[in-house]
Length: 153
Ligand SMILES: [Zn+2]
Image 1 (tube, rainbow, N blue to C red):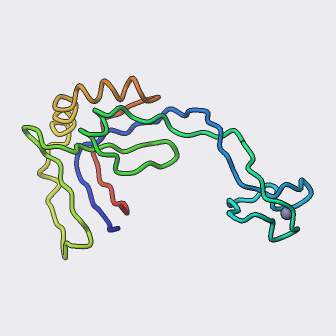
Image 2 (image 1 turned 180 degrees about the vertical axis):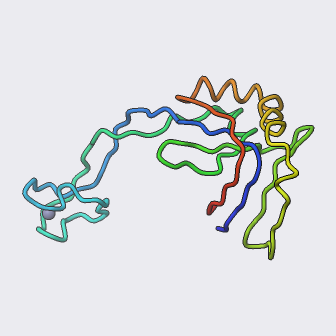
Image 3 (image 1 turned 90 degrees about the vertical axis):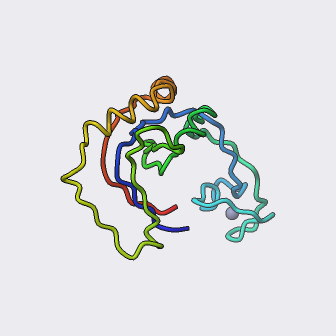
């Protein structure tokens, strides 16, 4: 686990929600507060009322998994509220992305005024055109953006 820093072009994708059944372990007594707890109870009997703990199916949502090709060629930096931030996972001609392991780097500095942001977005769109087309089909929306990200991985 470490902090990572990324600067460059990326795809911002709104993932498609998929309805699924989520099985939760809850207290069998409808009168007990542990009948709908915020956590799963991995015990046989309820610690609050002593009733048996049962498996209960509830509707939930997950994101549709991305295709294997996209998962290999692009890396999902992180997801926030169904929005996934995708960057290249492989090197291709003209690669202009930058990333740092923030825990290893003592200091990071870069003159970003010298960077050609539109050209870098165009590079991502053309170098990863096939993967972008798959993302467009698999997501609600896909935008090509350029910017700074710091996240814990
Ligand atoms: Zn209970």
